[in-house]
Image: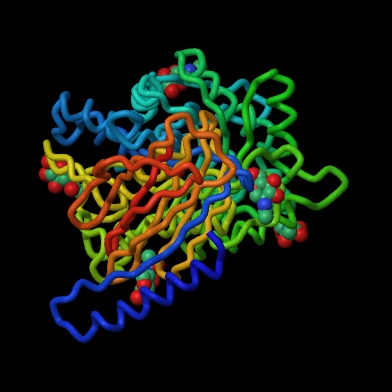
Length: 480
Ligand SMILES: *[C@@H]1O[C@H](CO)[C@@H](O)[C@H](O)[C@H]1NC(C)=O
Ligand SMILES: *[C@@H]1O[C@H](CO)[C@@H](O)[C@H](O)[C@H]1NC(C)=O
Ligand SMILES: *[C@@H]1O[C@H](CO)[C@@H](O)[C@H](O)[C@H]1NC(C)=O
Ligand SMILES: *[C@@H]1O[C@H](CO)[C@@H](O)[C@H](O)[C@H]1NC(C)=O
Ligand SMILES: *[C@@H]1O[C@H](CO)[C@@H](O)[C@H](O)[C@H]1NC(C)=O
Ligand SMILES: *[C@@H]1O[C@H](CO)[C@@H](O)[C@H](O)[C@H]1NC(C)=O
């Protein structure tokens, strides 16, 4: 279709639309064209997901009354690609606590061996604050990537002798301790956590050693700048190589995208840049959102973000554009992939016993409440699978936001968010692809629907189909 012909249609519709405005009952409609070119490929997708750290894994395992059959349903919703979202990344916390009081995550080395050179007394309880059995269940349902992430080293390895309240790892640039340099001991310790998982049948893929290192939290955490993170990455990489482990290094889970960007210079500095040993650069979305690519050639993941203090609005896809609403999060995910070049997107908590927006699913006794945020993430996760590539997708309408991904099996998943007050008649063209069935299945999430499958549409020979995208909705078109 030529652009001048398109413009003619647009003009005709605009004329109709303004005519209709005179009649109160007239349906207002708009027209848009969307074009996807699967031959123009961008970053690879590793997947979407969340964490069950700080004992939230225990909520999933029934601590507060979720019955065994609903536990299984919940695990399916989170990790099964046929009956749920098929989340493919799970972020487990590597605990630094010497007890399980409050919501602490147990350390595999709860007490100091006395010095960094003494033999550590590691301990494995097969539970890991609920996260080990959770990881087993997730793997059984097809989870692809397990990301082990320490918020802090154990207190005895730190300048403040405390897992909480900031402090630095003893031995990084500018930070020394009377007890010695604990960098190698911390690397050995993290590797041992991975070994415990793997000896018990659960592969760990990615390893991180910091969480929000710009912020001295009252809970587990550790401060670091880029130089100090680089000091540790070099030692961790050597240790992984020496142990002949197949393990990717993530860094640094900065508190916001800008704060992670600010760490890049330190990670890239010197004759032996730490970035060379890094597999994934990770940042959070709290203090600044992922809206641009980080300055790195490595893959990037948005590894934590959530609405922590907005009104509890689990079942609202669109109302007032509130911070916990479904469309806001659909758009956050889309912007992260399209504008910030991420390969992964993780919300903070997957499911938890709470009446807040900090998880995707709320567990209220024996009830599961899926939020619209959950369904928004599922509309990406279920259809743009690990290994998929993001591809070029353009929309002619300002309030119709698009993204598209080509999967390794050739299926194309295109997400369209309609943030307008009216439905759009859409002409969607798929170029540069080879589809087996030339069939498109739409799935919709809006205030009324949770990823509802709609009637399939057939593609014309030129790769085009006509469809409708309702007002204030998210539709994923899976082309097969
Ligand atoms: C090792 O730690 C465990 C508990 O974490 C403790 O029961 C045991 O006594 C410790 N062993 C030594 C030799 O300190
Ligand atoms: C246990 O951890 C807490 C918090 O870091 C710390 O205050 C306490 O000294 C630790 N206890 C022992 C015996 O190491
Ligand atoms: C990080 O902090 C150390 C210690 O204060 C300092 O020497 C180093 O220059 C800092 N690095 C960056 C990139 O700011
Ligand atoms: C996007 O990320 C990939 C790695 O996944 C990288 O190779 C590429 O350079 C990045 N693109 C931009 C524009 O940053
Ligand atoms: C939708 O549009 C409104 C303006 O009408 C804007 O304030 C809001 O940010 C948009 N929502 C999203 C998710 O982009
Ligand atoms: C967790 O679940 C229990 C039992 O259903 C309930 O009494 C409690 O209030 C819940 N806690 C939160 C934070 O929702």
